[in-house]
Each structure stands twice: as structure tokens, then as C-alpha cells.
Length: 479
Image 1 (cartoon, rainbow, N blue to C red):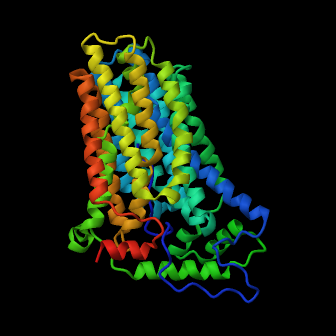
Image 2: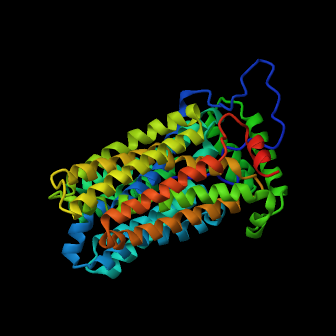
């Protein structure tokens, strides 16, 4: 369940140019150029429209958990056919993520979001009218492609429109809305049919398509493609008609010029020794994030609870759905207080504990021991696992990815890390049902072993980046 990434231009990176001098009236150069309520309203409206895509992302990822039993019953799908349906969303997302940068640069941020929402709409319509596996998988693939593009362009757009003093908080909304969408799908999906839930999935897409007509394009993208008049108009709409945008406009234009003067990075550049540690850390965190089992557990939570002994997966699915968003919010607050490494270690340790508890419960059940306690222990273990994941392992790897790569390779490195993340998501979401058929306890013990390896990796390889400038981080890792 991938949650998101920095960008080649417009992400949380310090400009490579000298900052402009403060004005003689002593105004702060804190990056906040919103001088009236109207301009702040436009920033918030633009963010709201963008994160409709994040909410859509969450609904799409969470859709397969509460609907598994009813879809298999209504359409007569086998285990392997449903595994394909559950996992093919990640195949589409992989393709979408790989092409997202080019699409966002070609069509603009708004154009990319509009295109993605339309593709997601087509996917949900195909799922709603499905009579068999083919149209069901096609719809799921289209939805996956759409959220693959959205997973890149939404945080990019927010980072590019937000004042610097609000950028961190506003970009965090992206991850919160992904978790909220997933929780929404979990909870609502237990009370409505799978076709109705597919119809509900259309709502955030339609809201985004309509809302995009009322917000400005990213001023950074407009500057990058040389649309000078539109660039100034967009920046003024975001900062207010009475705001002095001259310093920010010059800063953006100089930054774009500096970025365009750098040599175009290629994939083989990542093999250079000076970038090896950054690549190892970025790729390694994504491998452990996915291969610890999160998407298998999230995609098929309802049936996992039934396997543990619950008569229905509704109670467990609702419980899991209720904890994700608030714990993700807590993790966002703690990230800059405790540091990245401590939060990662706490998170992965909790995931390990959750795997052990769930694995032991399934082990006892298979040996006819503590049968009355098995469902409660599995619910407890999975809630501990998902809560711990939401606390740190879900978001911190994406934050660290934005910090450890130098600007000249950030784009290509981000594409590589994103591809690794979605590939891992596909492997686990496809294999999970087969692993559970092989051994329910063994599946969770396997994920627990990967969590243990992740603890060793974080302790010995991952650096602490809290309180350090991007230049300091990159110099220490890529010297």
C-alpha cells in the first residue's frame, strides 16, 4: 500500500539558488505568501480537490477486503481467479507509476489528475457491470493504473502549490486521505454489496474531475514549460491578489533554470558508487515495507478473520478500518519529534509482535488448542500489525526517499523505488492466498522473519535524517 514520494521539481528540497533578501519592512521569508483569507482558501480548495485522488487510492486498495466472499459467490470465482483480481490492481499501478512523471510533465498536474480520474471511473464502471472474471480484472487494472498515476501526481501538485511553511502539513494530508479511503472501503463495504461499493468508488473521481475546473494549475509546472503569463496568474490566485509574489516568482524561475541545467540522469547513473548507499537504503526500505506482508493482510483481511474462526469478517474488518487514519496522523506528528529511525524501529517491532501473535493463534487452531481464543488473538495480532505499520513503516520510507537522493538523480531514483514498491505489492497480494492455503501460521511467521531482518537493516544501514538539511544528508551518504 504504497503512500508517497518527492519529486524532481517542487518537492521538499531547498532551492539551489541564493534566497532573496528580506524586504526592508522586515517581512518574514518563511515561504508564506498568502496574505489574505481568499488566497488561503484557494490553497486549501486546491489541496482538497487533489486529495480526492488520495481518497480514491484508498478505496481502490481497500475494495477487495470486504467484497471477497460476495464476489466469489456471485461470479463463481476460484481462489486463483480472485487472487488475480486482488493483485492486478498493483500491476496497473506499477505501469501507472512508471509513466506518471512523463504524463505529469506532458499534460500538467491538473491534466494528469483529470486523466487518472477518468480512467478510474472507467475501471469502476467495468467492475460494476462485470458478469465474469475478464471484465472484473480489466476494471481493476484500469483503476490500478489510475491510482498509480495519482500516487505520484497528487503529492507533487500539493508540494508545488503550497507555501513553504505549510508544505509539510498539507502533503501529510495525502497519506491521511489514503488511509481514510481504505478505512472507508473496509467499513462501508461490510454493509453494502460489492456492486454498490464500486458505484461509491466513482464519487471521489467525479468530485476531482469537477473540482479541477475551479483551481489553478501548478505554477512550477507552468514556469517549467515556459507559460510565463499563466505562471504569474496561477501564483497570484494561490497567494492572493494583494500579495507580493515577485520574490517567490523569481525563486521558482531560478530554481527551474538551475534544474534544467543539470545533466539528464539515466538509470545506469544509480550504479555509481557514490550513490550506492542511497539506493540501498531507498530500495531496501521499500522491499521490507512490502515483503513484510502488508498488502496481503490488507487486501484479504475479511477472509483472514473468517479463517481464524469468526463467523463473519465484518467485525474485524471494521475494527481494522477504524484504527488506521488516527494512527497515521500520530505517526506524522511523531516523525519530526522522535526521528525517522526510532519511529521505524518501533513500527517494525510492533509488526513483528503482531505477526507472532497471529501466527501462534493459527498454530494453536491447527492443533485444536485454545479454539475459543484463536479469533480474538488473530484480531489482536492483525490490529497490532496494521497499527504499527501505519505508525511508521507506511510513511517514513517515502519521506526518507525524498531526503536521501540528490536532486540530479531524484527523478530516476524515485521511479526505481516506486517500481520496487509496486512490484513487491503485486508479489505479496498475489501470493498471500496461496501462502495461507499452505499454512496460515507459517505465513505470519514468514512475515515475522522479514520484520526481524528489517530491524537489523534499519539498525545497521538506515541513517537518521531528522534535523539535517537535505544537503547535509546527501553529502554524508553520497560522498
